[in-house]
Length: 314
Image (cartoon, rainbow, N blue to C red):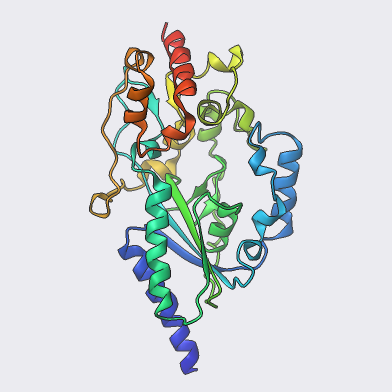
């Protein structure tokens, strides 16, 4: 019984540590494989080519649902999330940039904080082995986060928490430390609400699923070639990403704003105009995108997106 109480205390200590480092949500789940039903749905989605040109999603598809494939001795997965909701959208005459891209690179921020949790665990578990994942390893983070009790997947196909909505960034710490798992949140869903589906400019979201080939976030960030005229005309002034489906979600409307300045995670306040971007040199782009996920999209694609925005604004 004493051992059990000690183990329970460890889970609480982990959660308090995570919250003290700036994470808004933290949950624990086992390193067992994710339910085969979710694996099959993902395979069907890939088979329908809904992943567009994101071939990396096809690589090691089954391994995504098995934390043990990433850390063979894995026993537990600590799932964390950071709320990144901004107080207001960009000015009307400014190009639209996804909120998360206005923050310092979240991959670095989350990885550094998870490493501190791992260091904390070393003092509790002598033979600790761990692996940190922040988009760097093939891992079905939404499925694990659901199982760890962080939320449910809404019709916008994003993990949604009843308090923090779906403006969330995730990370995972896979470890060989045996921990007690949290329970998934009791049944929550979007009900009859379909605001996100109706708000999607290109019809990428439907009641039945999500097609990345039509998603403005995919088109402006990942897509390397030309964009078809039908989709171009619906891109409005989106330079990098799209949050139309997030902004109309009732959960997001009532969610608190991100207040992480003291943790070193604060968004820039920028107004990016079309002509400014069109006149950027490569050096100008590098200076603007330094330390931001925008840098990965590259100079040429950002220019392509700006030209489309220019045409759409007439």
